[in-house]
Image (cartoon, rainbow, N blue to C red):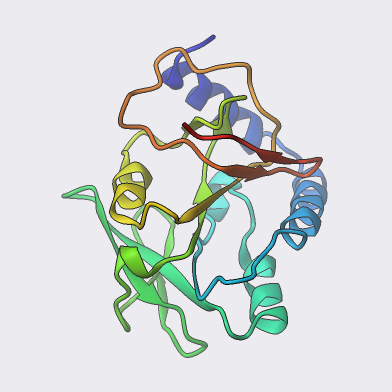
Length: 193
């Protein structure tokens, strides 16, 4: 098992070194699996938009597909407060103005606030995940704090271009494990305690 710091460095490097054609193929296959998820009963779906400079999972086609196939689902986007480490959440309407923050994340400029406890399903960004559903992000803990604000029955789905690693040696007790992770090759489901 290796540490979050080493995992973060390795997988960010691996992702950045993906040729564009390979990244496009991985994203397309991941989207095909994401379409197979059960969206029944989901009214509010929290989605992240990718930092394209870091070759994050491309969620734009997923958002478009959700709008077409599940028009009853309200998409919700986060807006990060880097000073406090918290996130605000806004309904994503077709006329919502998106602005890239200083980290390259497209965020809603403003809009209708959505409370965390309203969210039914959260699509979670990550750099890597292990066979127990623990994830490694960029290390700010924003999603862990946000997921703790959600209802206990909120569904969590990580999106990853790579399969799982064996384990994370320094997972913290406050880390919130994922229930599901979608990859280009497989959908992983994890039993949570």
